[in-house]
Image 1 (cartoon, helix red, strand yellow):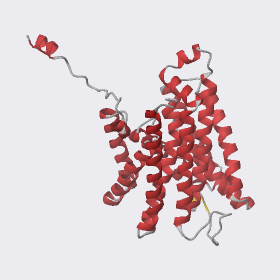
Image 2 (cartoon, rainbow, N blue to C red; image 1 turned 90 degrees about the horizontal axis):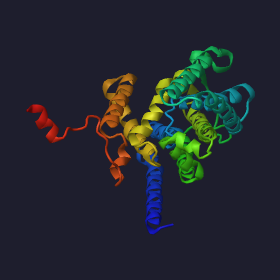
Image 3 (tube, helix red, strand yellow; image 1 turned 90 degrees about the vertical axis):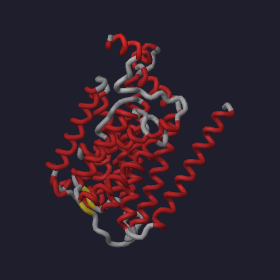
Image 4 (cartoon, rainbow, N blue to C red; image 1 turned 30 degrees about the vertical axis):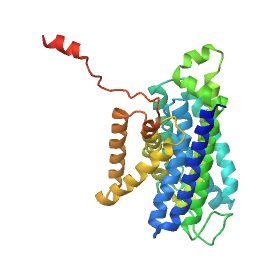
Length: 338
């Protein structure tokens, strides 16, 4: 390891420690549960953005079905808890298996295609899951959703009177998500994923099975997203198809990573730190949840047009900005005028 790599790793570790300290202190500095819930939203979407970044950032596969795996985790935990009295911690393991199987099935279909066709298949999968949740009413509660009733503080049941407890649990989940993302990025799997993103045909010509590589990354992302969905559901104590499985939620997850910086370790965290407070501010000022999505769209367009590398590109020395509308050379302009 070179001196420059050691400095970079030390800087990354320092930023991570500072971030953890600030996030750990946040609930003690705010006065109401509303601000704690905003902090939880940040933690959830930063973690989900890190999940999306593995398949959408490192592998370059623009996936819009991450909310479906979030829904699998939340509904699996609630159904097992309410119907069979099974602890959410057992539900966490069951959800991991179910989401891995779901990722394998959708991967078998979608990874045979590339580009926009892959994205369209993931959108279709999101809608299929949402509709299934609505019509499987005996198990999912249909459009009305499911809820968990608070009885007593219980770590085994993930029910707490104070929102701060689940805040710290989700903080630990975010740290784990960033760590897994870092391990993937620095592993052989991450190297293959970035190579596939750059030129899949060249990778396959070297004898590497791009299908298996992408499938592994997809399953890792899906399992992580299901765990985040389960913990978030117990924070809300209520879930419905619109809350956890709508296409708008998947768009929100992808937007967090894109705004922060696709393919970067801290990009999703920075994107969530920007978009979540702005969305809450827009909802409060304009009095509509739709205004938050409008803001998402506006910020996303600005980033894609003027800074495709996201906020993290400002900290990358080797970043080369791409112009959507390239300038003409002066000679060409003079020749055209004459």
